[in-house]
Amino acid sequence: MIENIFDSFETAPNAETVKKYQKIVIDFGDAHVLASCHEAKADFLVTLDKKHLLILQNKIKWVRIVSPAELLVGAHGLEPWTSSLSEKRSNQLS
Image (cartoon, rainbow, N blue to C red; front, side):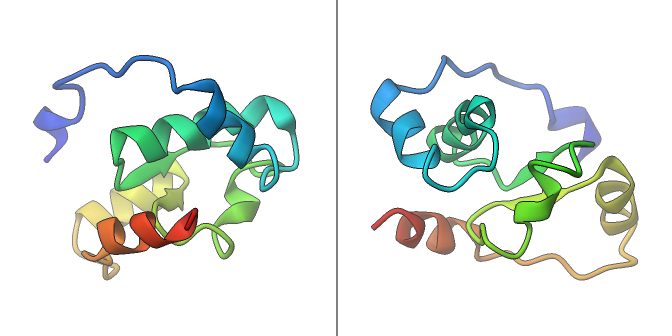
């Protein structure tokens, strides 16, 4: 799992997607982060930003927003992970 984390790089998200996420985020400057996750079809968003991004854990369901510690705990089988994130992603902005 860890060895495949950085196997590709994505381009910047398009302006239309960023604009959609400006309605969801607390800080407009973070809209591009969620837009990038959406366009890249990311399963996880790993962040230390408690004030702006981690607070969205219960609002955003198509990507799992976690702290680095939560990711490591989950990677070692100590916490169940949802495998149907791609289905939730397609329904989020519909």
